[in-house]
Amino acid sequence: MTYTSTMSPPVLFSEQPTLRGTLCTLRPFTSRDIEAMGPILADPEVLRLTGSVHSTAEAEAGTQELDERTRTWYQTRVHQRDRLDLAVLDSRTGGCVGEAVLNEWQPDDDACNFRILLGPAGRDRGIGSEATRLLIGHAFAATGLHRISLEVFAFNPRARRAYEKAGFVVEGTLREAFKFDGEYIDAVLMSVLRPDWERLGG
Image (cartoon, rainbow, N blue to C red; front, side, top):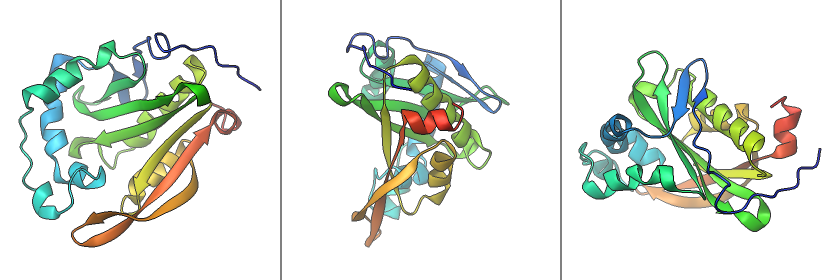
């Protein structure tokens, strides 16, 4: 099926959905969700896997308190129309365990980037896989996007498996693109196209 995009900047992500799965729910950030992001963003594993720091020492030195700039940034996400930032809630506890994002929109190419991060409470339970499928499914169902891409470091096989379950395929490798604790790490480029998603029954 050919999908012709008619989306313009003001409306691409004008809908701020609540997406419900079995393990998790994705929704626009509330004030409670924003405050929960403090410890998540300071988690050493999050800092390492997102490439936010370059050493274990830096990763372990993060502060769990949100600064006002970061708090304001999250508060303004709901007003953005060229990206979609959603809190990931654990269906079991109702607590925010991370975020899932569509950003870096390329309007001339009907393409954007996807990223997700989860704190300790959201890992190793299938939440990442389900959250990825929920947001990718929404993107292809509600917008004219044709391509969604991402970059994942080679030392994060858990995330790569979650992306593959959602239809992402490897396109290439940025060799030794990131340095952590003195070691060079490859970055793997992946994408999912609308036809890929449709073949999966999305």
